[in-house]
Structure formats: C-alpha cells, structure tokens
Image (cartoon, rainbow, N blue to C red):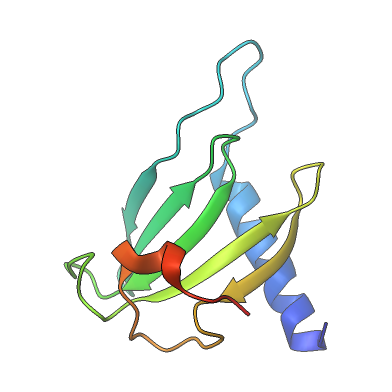
Length: 109
C-alpha cells in the first residue's frame, strides 16, 4: 500500500471511529441500513452490514438524488476484529460520476 493510501486509511479510520459509538452488550445485530449525514461540503450516505460496520460511503452535493450519476463511492473492508483494513473506490477512481443506488454493482480498487 502506498504512503498516501496508508494516510487516507488512517484518517478514514479515525473519522469513522469518532462517529461510531461503542457497541451495546446483549443487543441483536443491526440490520443493514443507509444513514444520511449532510455538511457544508457534500452529502454523505453510509451503508452498514449486519455487524454494524460501515461498508460503503457515498459523497455528493447536498440535495442530490441517490439515482443521479453524481456520487463518489468508497467501500470499506474489515479484519476479524472490526478494524478497517482497506478503503477502495468504485471503479478505482474518486470521480463524482457514480450512482449511489448502484453501489454494490461497481468494481472496487
């Protein structure tokens, strides 16, 4: 992994861990879901797996439709301890030309 990728991975891990709360004991695993958060720069969507891990992050302009080809989407991979091990981009690039609703159909690298 190149240095810039290691830095991006470290920054993304720190950002995500700051947004996630500690898991609560004795609760059933959360169902996969999509969360919308907006800030001044862009709208962010988060898709979670059944273990509560963020699996996809989509970013686009605030107010953009999920079906518009104006998203950049990244996929996160985890080790067995729940630590982020890799961040990959849809179709291998960070261009804002993907469709959020099609996120599972892209190739990530």
